[in-house]
Length: 206
Image (cartoon, rainbow, N blue to C red; front, side, top):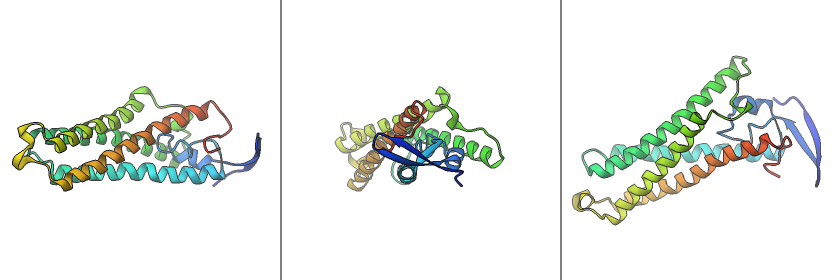
């Protein structure tokens, strides 16, 4: 899996690095910027793998909860405003998730077919990175509005029989927290990528 191991000296002593050809080949930086580096240390590899699992798990959980709420709670039969807000949150998240999934599959297909094409050679074109970042951030904002109207019910449309139950409010709080953390994770993949491109020796986990 790894072609070689090198010892790189830094200010604190020696650093054992591995040739991360496999990770760089199959893992795009916007999923895990650490595992997408050319050379990483063993500790980088472990922390990068944990980060990848957490990053993916957070968004899968948020997406699944959004989908469940859309199908079972915020339906077109209830409050049109709450339905529209939640639909907007779900659609924007779906656009971001679809973009990430498509780009990841393209890189994995290229790797399996022997092609040298990889998103890790540089940064995504702005329209693609914006589709990811703007999608998750827009979804977060729509969820904030949805939670506000659900809790405070400032208009008659979300009162009475259209009032949101305590259970659903709790679920919305969980979704909101997941999205806040998920947005931070996603933005940090891009930040770490830009940093590492300007620092050949991996320092992301130092």
